[in-house]
Image 1 (spheres, rainbow, N blue to C red):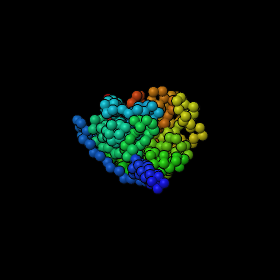
Image 2 (tube, rainbow, N blue to C red):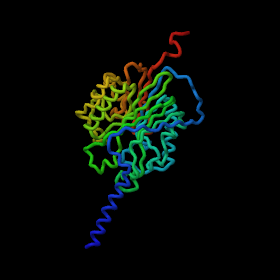
Image 3 (cartoon, one colour):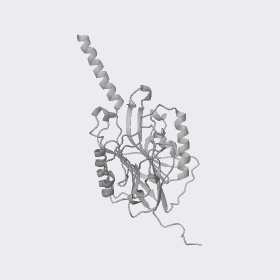
Image 4 (cartoon, rainbow, N blue to C red):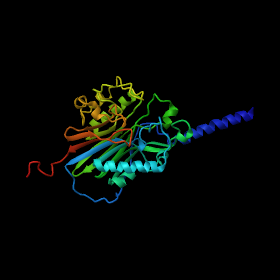
Length: 351
């Protein structure tokens, strides 16, 4: 009997120890972190000291470049060549769209599931972005998801958001948001943090305050709280641009539930209306979106049926153009917008 109790005790403490090790560093609470900014000398980069009068901003949830199924539904482990091929294609697409500032969500920094490649630094080096600001928001020794078989597990995890810039990033502050109270405590040990990543970019004589976000997807009440916090930050800290994967639909979206192969439900979700209280404008305003919804869908990439990705901006900036770009690399499509922030270099009326 004593041996049985001893064995039960050993098994119990062994399981507790394994749980603690797998989920380390156990970040559950909301906190602000001043994070590192990297300078990388890209391949073949030519230094350009001249600042243009137009800045192009692009946001893209990369889904760690697995493509559709990255959330675990059809995920199977892929080798290093798979991710190197995807990254090489991504470099070509980024060079073609040529944003000055690239804001990424769900990007991996040496995670097991993506062959231990730091995707942000890989892209920066090859797509000519000397400034890299990482936001580590999912960090664990082992993620046991998808659950079975073990060969499908994500394993060691280091992931989050990143901002790549052609111009100096002088601040990188990350706000890790509280995990949903609706999740079991043991699930939250392994669950990713949603976040706000605030960067300040020196663009000529102007400093641009930009926030890259990835908001809650599965708990509407939690997402509303996150947007309320974000709106307060926008007003208190006078932000210029807020971009990212908001996991919300525009007010005028006709379809709000019963999506193909998805149980996502946005009925009675006021997230978009709450965000508009920030007094920021949106690059595809609701009245424009309502005229042709499908033109602005960003998810899923193969058969888009909704818009989850946004760029909001301070109204003193002049928005010139906004568009959703085609791509098959992620489960999301990229959104790009151009802003006039200075006096044009050339008169449009000159001979």
